Structure formats: structure tokens, C-alpha cells
Amino acid sequence: MRLSDDEQDESDSSSVPDEVHTICFLCGGGGAIADAKLAVVGGQPRTVDNGRPCALCATEGNLAGIVPPV
Ligand SMILES: [Zn+2]
Image (cartoon, helix red, strand yellow):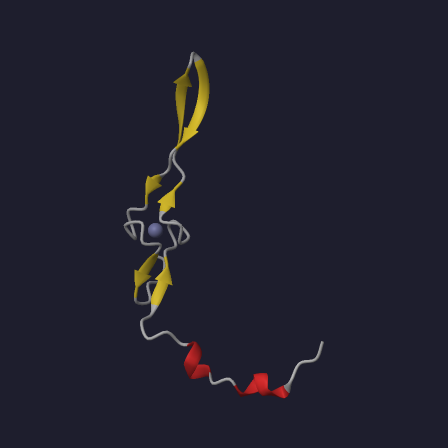
């Protein structure tokens, strides 16, 4: 395996997206937050985690622009 020097020629401008987004810091980009609850299923107590939609990014997983966590 051999690496060529041409890989150094990549322009940085090509790696910058036109639109800047911030990964949602509340859900980590998943769009949902773990929401474990106690449930009794068939007479047995269980933990049910259906999750709930992220209130911060509305399940998008990212926020428009640069948003610092407050
Ligand atoms: Zn989110």
C-alpha cells in the first residue's frame, strides 16, 4: 500500500458546507431522547423505553447555524 503526495493537494474550501449546522447537543443528533418508564406488561414489571422526540431540534438532529450549548 502506497500513499501519494497528491492527497495533500485537496482544497480546504471543498470540505466546508454551504450551510452551517450544529449537531443537537440535547439528543446528540439522534432526534430522540431516551425516556424509560415503568410499565406492567402481562403482570410483570418492565422498563419500556419508547423514547420521545427531541424538543430542541424537533427530531432533525441538528440545529441551523452555530448554536453553543447554554
Ligand atoms: Zn435534538
